[in-house]
Length: 203
Image (cartoon, rainbow, N blue to C red):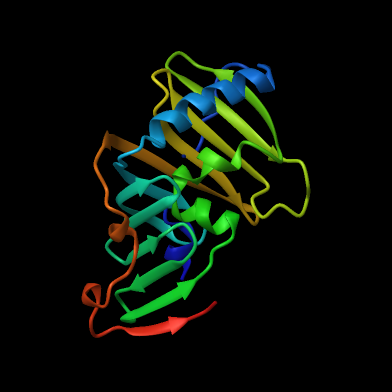
């Protein structure tokens, strides 16, 4: 279950030289450009690694299309069709069905930020030699994801997400981002994906 909480979106942050002084409008423009690339109509794919929090370290691959994703690690496969999530844990041979909240979606899909940033967050940004680092702080204390950073290349490809989970920071590094046509059926669990698994509905 810990793996399930942390898989992916989507990028942690080595805060370097300048203070976060650039305007909210500048930060929003950077994320708008990144969202346009990530949200390309046909879909995309990438590799990722996660460190920190309670799970230590893992890596895998992710396929995305709009707000849908499929993430695969050696321990877990997660499908999310925009509403429902299926998480297959290999060590227990179980599939858990759930409806994840915002923070859970971001920890499993680093690209969830492409819609989250548009409302409810204060944005600030600093620029390094080869990237933009955007800091997002929730306006309301009840928001499930209170604080995170998104690092975006100068070509507007997301590279890293760093998110606060409880009192611990979790870092997701993203590599090999590429356009890749995806069908909607790729984001839903099918019985043939794990025919012997026990299915547990947690909704």
